[in-house]
Image (cartoon, rainbow over all chains, first blue to last red; front, side):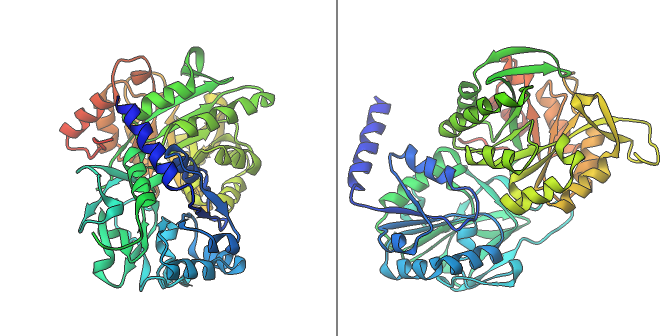
Length: 226
Length: 259
């Protein structure tokens, strides 16, 4: 009975997005198979692309990535994807940044002292080291949500999400921070502003609660209203 | 607060899981894809697959296993065993694993760690260490020596030095296996684990010797491990991951309890 209901929901979801083009931006920053796989689990086909012209046709953009900010920004510029992302943001379509994608949407990163996309005001900073604290912050951790947001609904108290990073995004406005996590200090790990949401953790590797976030994102109209 | 990870380890040979006792007399206990799904649903925080397939012409069987596991679970998993070069790493990562573990090949050619970290990122590169207790010598001052071939070949390399060298080269995590404790179910090697964990800034997964939830408690506190590898104690149904986590939570160890 429960699985029939889930199948029905998945069917509805895939029908709803028949006209949609969900683009996963590939800028040679890590492995995208788990993002593609998670969308598949939701009955949705994502288009992995390095082509700005394909991004221009997108109705929804996922911007994942792991690795160093310096190389990532260089590759984005080389491929013309920096402009494509700015245009997507300007068009108002829903955008989801993940991990490195949540960092280089800001203006600047301390990693390689890199000028970034600047979709949001703010800077990416290094996680401070202290004795006994392991860096990278790798593994499962809780998120304390500061305000409601459509993309972060339906998540139980005590749910944990998978992190692996040494830097964190620090938006200039506290209103842009939806959720925080503790590792030596409390840092922003869920960001939302206008048609943009971003997570420092990996929803695509965070079990069924991560999948819930992706499903919420696919159903989100891009408005920042609660 | 970051949770301590509980990681079931599945030894795979020719596409089937085994569990070795001191690396000998492996017995077949099932399908790795089905087991991965079971452990995912049972609350495993991550999985480790160790490919002990002897012949390289059967490597594609493992890649197929990785691909099928990746389609079944939404948590990270790593693959080790027989990773000799960048192509081996790429095959495993593109099939859907989050991390690759390098062990013997990295000792024989340390540049492999740097090359892997550069090509795929440090977060992908796990250094697998097989370590044996020895009388301290000038070449092994920590009293722990690196070994390969399942413990049969001592390398004359100090374990603590090698862990720090691997961090310098770009390893993102260490999976530390005590050959002395492996398969005994008498508890992890606490001194070794603590020594390595305190010597490096990156996370350390303790491996070898888990028999009871108390053993995990010891290695996550006294041993300073960030994660604990388990095998027989869950493979044979003696304990469940839920039971282990409930015990650890009672001991005030942060663990992931909702999944």
